[in-house]
Each structure stands twice: as structure tokens, then as C-alpha cells.
Amino acid sequence: MESSLKISVSADDTGDRQKREEPAGMDEGYRVGLAASGREFRYSGEGEGTLLRFLERRHVAIEYQCRSGYCGACRCRLAKGVVAYLTKPLAFVGEGNILPCCCIPAGDIELDI
Ligand code: FES
Image (cartoon, rainbow, N blue to C red):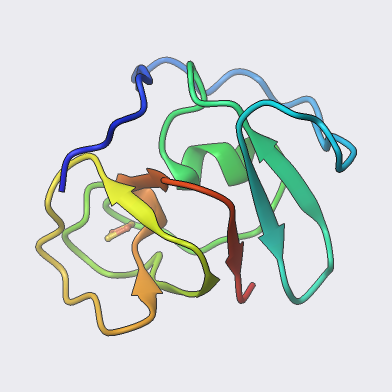
């Protein structure tokens, strides 16, 4: 599935380690909620990268290995919402699960992490 969002995913966007947890109520982008902790962030689209990258920048602990949709290590449950895959994952993605390493939010989402 192709995304309708315009984003850029660059290989060198690994340097930003500042905590960027935004308050709820911002009116741009999509809400990304984390059910276990109750934390929530705002995915603004441009420059945010994959959902995995987005979460890492906000210091959310999430497993990963290949970062390309091959291994399934990043698999997590999507409690609410829809994501769009930037590349078709090769790893198995069961009903209700997503691979954050190769997708982006396609609306407000909530993850069971
Ligand atoms: S890290 Fe391997 S599928 Fe996401």
C-alpha cells in the first residue's frame, strides 16, 4: 500500500536524540498513542521517517533487527488506527499487527506498547 503522506526517510536521520514528547492538542499531523504508558506524540509527516524511527527519537523502547520488514522483530500490535507501508514487508504481519520499521501512521493510531 502506498502512502498518501509526503514524507522523506533518510538514512542519516539518526542523530536527533532529544526527547520530543509533544502535548496533546496540537492540530497538525497524527496522534500516536502508546496504550501501556499512556504517552502520546504527534507524527507530523515530513522528516519523521518510519514509525520505528519516530518512536526511537522519542526514546520509546522497541525491538528491531533488520529495519527493513524482513525479520519481524519490531512487530507490535496496532490497537487503533491504520498505518501505510512504505515498502511491502516480507515478514509475516498478522491481523492487528504492524511492522513499525517500514510503515508510517495513516491517521491517528494507538499501539499496544
Ligand atoms: S526490524 Fe525487522 S521487520 Fe522490523
